Length: 467
Image (cartoon, rainbow, N blue to C red):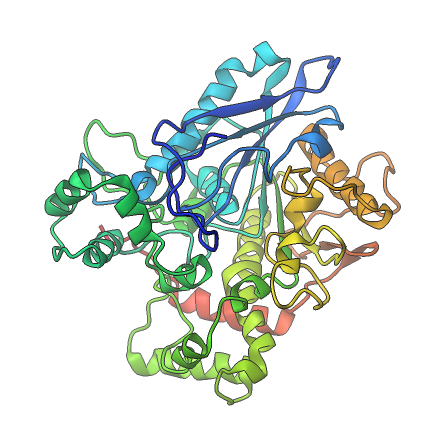
């Protein structure tokens, strides 16, 4: 299995992968009659983990619906997202790998029986944020027709770096170097062993790093003559100024935060009482203004009590809402108001035998779906080789049929195939499908805190990239 250099945090191994890792996988249904719709998946993993292999993202559940499935690797960590705003390291190498893969699909997929004019891109977590960035990017016009984003958006605070040179400098500090000069940073990284770079990048559990903003991430690129840029402005500015008029689908799970509280310790919980909840995608005029909004948020989630083990499920909600659910809704709402193509959203709340991520945490008995649980109802990876039980099979069939219908027709529930019609958003109203034990059209799950977060972001959202 090819994968780009990475450190599988939590496993008793150090660095795996090779720099010769840019591989693409194409899975075609047997006896297929083309041209078939194409679904291209971008894996997640905080931009430092993951691969396009079959261990997690096996194709079986999808290709049985008569689509071609494509997955691939892209460079990770410093090798993929070192952003120094210089000709040597302009940034977004990993995103440019994704664009290169899509260009390869556009050029070659017809030879596999695929339709190059009917490509849907989709991804989970950082893969969804990548999809969101590719939708916003001006460099991807014509490469795909539809897009699906599971538990991720480029509007999330963790999706891009607003100070990438400081991030690179901080990683080097862990290796014993002290410089903020971009040329020196590049020269030092170019001399270091890949193993040392990877281990320094993932020195803490990934969920903690996601909220500490110390990972190499996509960045807004500085214009450099002769260098192609993928991201020329902040995603919010791009999607509101000139959005692609393509069909879109967004989703989140109801208990995203269980994944993150699973690695919290007494020390990390105590540290949250000494800092505000906001990322650097928000810019407050004064510290007093930031503290005032911080008190409002903490009052909602913790009712004035300090963060501790006693209210850790409230902390799970605080991870769920601003990091995943709200950015996804914000993006869906922006696009629904600014394009004519349909925009769909769903909540995944099912709790069953394939909620693999949740079952690996100490919160496995909590009802609902954890961050990443829906992956295992979309893909038949080799990590879960056992048979699918009857109830889980219903969810697999529902979800994969709706996703592939969307890829084929731009409509996830055509021709009365389901007992319910999945309604897209309108310019006046947001509509959500909830996929749980049943299928149900619902309103927004958390409207009160949505309005609070929306007010904060509308007032304080960062408007200019730091170049």
